[in-house]
Length: 387
Image (tube, rainbow, N blue to C red; front, side, top):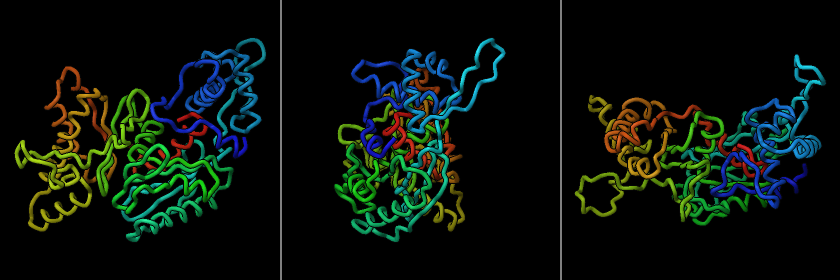
């Protein structure tokens, strides 16, 4: 598999199911069926050609042809014969060659540091690097991203499949950051700049969308879900019917600036002091907790109110989409406990129990590496059609 082969692979597309499961029309068949074989091995591993044919519905001739191609490219390896009590020649087991390529993942979501990693095809982090942001904005922030990616490319010890980047702000499908106020970016063509710099396939997406891909690919996600990221700001990624939701202007999930306070009455107009981030962002929460502790007061009511405001923001989304779970990503010491309990209580008390009473709310299991690992899913999905 050459660099040109990788670059010409199907891109990461909106509305496309992350995990193909069935055959398609002849004009799309080869690319789709190739992804189907890779997805089966990526998720299940150690399958024979006959196993793959049964699980995908493809013919044995098609499987044999595709596997031969993937073996030649080094993306699939033969593991040896399966032990079997059946008469006849034992089947040869296959698996994804998870060391054939490496992936560069970059997380720009933290307000003080840009973080990056080199990962294998299984999402295992092999090397790390980071650069302090030091208040950089605009072109200075862009230079720090470029320098970080240069360092990560130098750390790679195998051919690089691609570069995935999770960025704050609103990001369109070309990888242009339309706006990221904390970084001073407006119409920043980050994906194009990184591709020009490295010559590699690059995918840039909103950090919350990247995080929800990680939860889908490596976490405990069970179905339609919303992942809420709480940090310097508040955002969310939505996964519905197996595909990411972007919105008409690529701002789906931008819940941090939604007014959740009715403190000024029902006729109140948009007010930044009444938006979700005012109660839920990490800097705001930490400051309120410090003030309470300095006054000798219990901080629990502060966390509980933040959870209630989050529940108010999430209730219409859960009601409209009938989501099965909400996942929180951020500082565990702030989110897990009174805040999460108040959120789920508010959700359940404001929706019809018959349809939404079973919605679950939990913390992500992926910790601070969630965006880095989601960046790997971006590349895997875009280049190989697997997640």
